[in-house]
Image 1 (cartoon, rainbow, N blue to C red):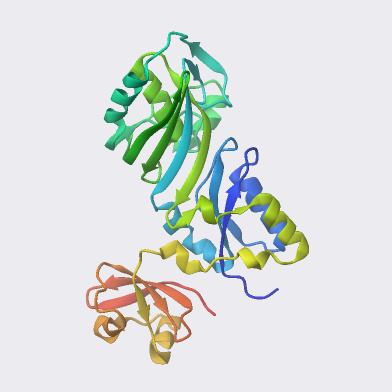
Image 2 (cartoon, rainbow, N blue to C red):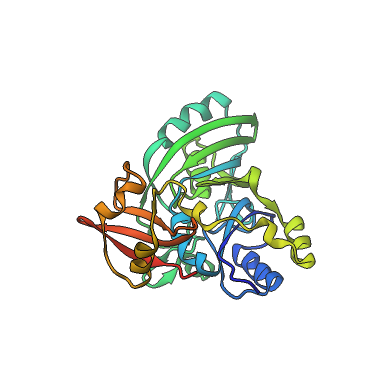
Length: 299
């Protein structure tokens, strides 16, 4: 196999876990080094970015990017997992009006503190919360700061509400659904979720699983391979000559004044380094008046 260094933007179907998708792609393309950049629950669909080869070292940048979701919330029923996969723990059939839900959304916009669900992979005391939950234990979870950039009601047919959400990484949409139900007084749970964007990766540009599966079987899957630079789409580029490229591969610091000519508007402490062929070869971090090769990707 040729050197594989890139990303796959898959429209994950409902049912498999993110790890299931990784395992399927590993088998399908005969490549061991495959990882995902942000978990989706089995019930959820939509953008799942897989990192192939050295691109697994870029997963943190995709995971750290803003997310966009389309969610359906079912009012009047609470579950232990906060979604449709869980067991019902409370029911309140009294209807609420659309105007009540719209008014309640205000308190969830902007910077908020969110308590993660017990059925989550967050570790507390060295144990994952979902392991504790499956053992019948519920522990106090410290709230986590998240940001809801946009939260719009796009559909209403009681007991269902459709929401469009733009949020910071680490936001639990299941918790948002649960908390919204508490805010209107009758409880709620998440019944459908699609991740429509993760940073630069969108649902419109994602390959469906049947199409990717067929391409893997036919040996044409690399048609869907995306350049690793997309993981750092908002990060400035520094173009290096042969000497600068050699410095990167030898771990040497590069004076900022030797690189600014490639982009005079570079600011901040992070940049992408390209070689003379325009290939990504490293992530650089600023150290005063020098750039330090942080993650290097040999050609």
